[in-house]
Length: 322
Image (cartoon, rainbow, N blue to C red; front, side, top):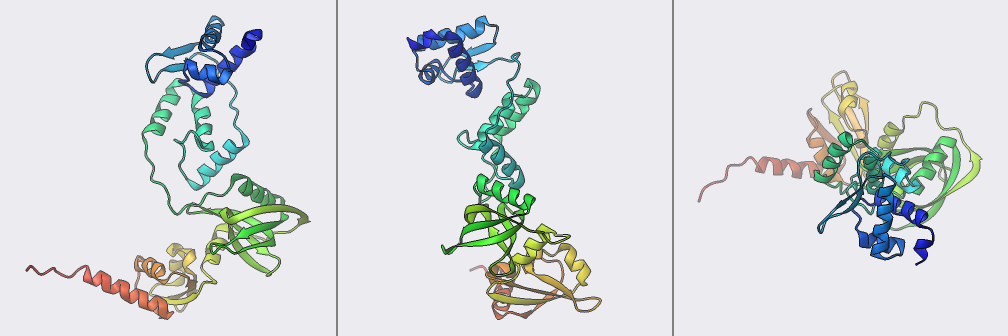
């Protein structure tokens, strides 16, 4: 058999397969190596003769794995695994238990490189926790996100191909200021040259990125998070204006920036000015603020606040017994 012509190379390949897939069976090893089951077991025996601790477990869930005592191999993550792992930390998404996804394979490699006392609890948490998925999250392509981040860092102008939520597609040239991760969604905060205006594009809707030779100078003292949230509060269909019974400096401390801009009226009141495409959502956000308020502008928002108020009052009515 051709495998016997270079048994040392086959044995090293066997070691790599066992390291990459703890619990791999003899028949799976044979299939990956392209040899018989008997030959695969012979390569395992060769590794044991070289004092490499190969453990085997019998039964339907058994197989070969590396025992403790072997010097761990260098941690080698692919580019996709490294990018996915960093993105998972940034936006908090959880596919760590999926062995087919880059985050899952990267974590497997990390766990295998840890000492037994550390690896045990880590693996136990990984196997037993059940994180709830964030259904509002949108995962961008790692390569696209990385290209945009690098363009921001290098102050390189880019041409992006974009598709809106409604399916409209276009290309535009922008100065990329920052990539911001907000509530499981990735945004490119940028300056659009065609419209000479600030824009925020969802990175998961970017279908292509082309780095251009031109460079740019970003605004001084740019706060990307505050800028993004302020941008998301303007330009929507329905204008809103709300009087808050609290001074502006206090409202600015706890009022979400995506609701709009806070302006002082006098020493005890302030005004919230913004816009929304979803008045019911906006009304619900107002309902939880801890101060009295009055809706001054926006008939759509006023109607939604009234409807929500009636629902809240109805929830306190006593149910008469028949």
